[in-house]
Amino acid sequence: MWFVILGVLLVLLNLAGIGPPANWTWNLFGDLWKFVLPFLLGIAWWAWADASGLNKRREMEKMEDKKQDRRKKNLEALGLVHKSRRKRRSQ
Image 1 (cartoon, one colour):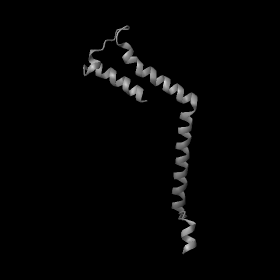
Image 2 (image 1 turned 90 degrees about the vertical axis):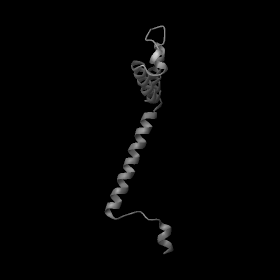
Image 3 (image 1 turned 60 degrees about the horizontal axis):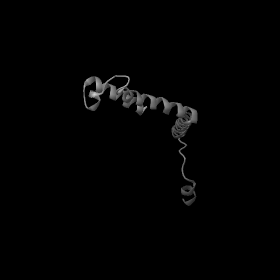
Image 4 (image 1 turned 135 degrees about the vertical axis):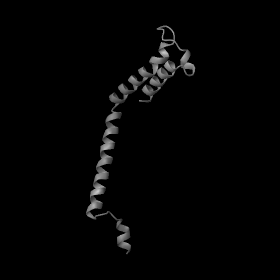
């Protein structure tokens, strides 16, 4: 995602005439690769993340966190807040 944001930022800076990207040309054999490179890196990153299972693992972790939060809220709503057994035994 960051690569795509960087690519869009470079294009916008060029079009607005701000900073070093303002002097870059859109010529195929000139500076075009500087605009295209972040987008190609973004594609490569997404392809690797999908192929390695990174995206799926992150998605599963988010779902597990939501499930734990939902369980905790339900227990609190029922008045069954989990307390430490050590505290109960010592009292």
